[in-house]
Image (cartoon, rainbow, N blue to C red; front, side, top):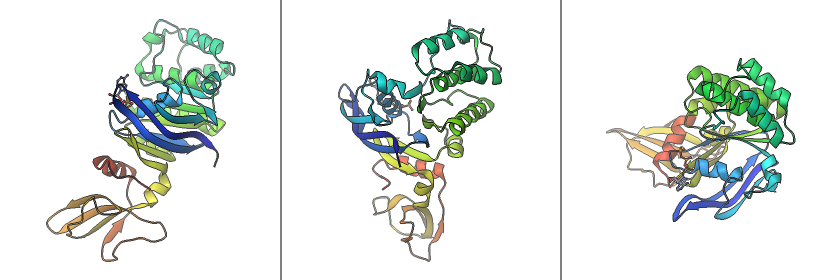
Length: 289
Ligand SMILES: Nc1ncnc2c1ncn2[C@@H]1O[C@H](COP(=O)(O)OP(=O)(O)OP(=O)(O)O)[C@@H](O)[C@H]1O
């Protein structure tokens, strides 16, 4: 697998507080990667390190083999970025924003941007500040796509969007992925939306990577077991979460795909993405291997 992004022991701290620590990742080119984690987990910090907006305190990060160190023009050209608040110059018209994009990007694709905005019915004359939140997100996405960068990094692009705007945003995004074979790294708290479109998962918690892998493989590597009440808790090997009632114990466990490692008397069922993520978040020390 060729890597779109490689991080090696990547770390960043603000003053004495580490926002991201020992982050080692290898994300495959052509995948759509969900970056999830609770507030303050370090998602935006990781994305800003990837885009070269921040300089790491430790380790390295490479985008398509190029060091993403802050200030490297070569690295910047590889990444299209939509920041968390998708800041647009509010006094600029959409046409002004396109002109600005064209003047700053060598591979700028004006017709792509105009076509997308036309499809969405967003007038080029309209001031960015007069657009709705959903339209601003779409303009920010169109600008990032027009950059024609092989890696698209989106920081919570679905925040503040209503369900229809979320669906439209994802439709445009997935259309671009299918047409151009982009790699997309996007953070979000809306796991249901991510599940439909992402094939990779990175779960950050308290600045550390808890899960990194292909979603299918991660899910196949876990089971939910229900059996007679035991004292097993989440500190037992292979157990991510344990819940007990008077008579029963429910365990979320890691298994080896070819060797389910549990007693046949226990009922077993597959785990969903949301419940898997929640189980790991409840136990920050658990790491999927
Ligand atoms: N500029 C900054 N100065 C000081 N601390 C910061 C700064 N930016 C982030 N932090 C801290 O770093 C940690 C990680 O923050 P970050 O914004 O990366 O998290 P996040 O996962 O993106 O959170 P959210 O989901 O709330 O956007 C937090 O503890 C945050 O308070």
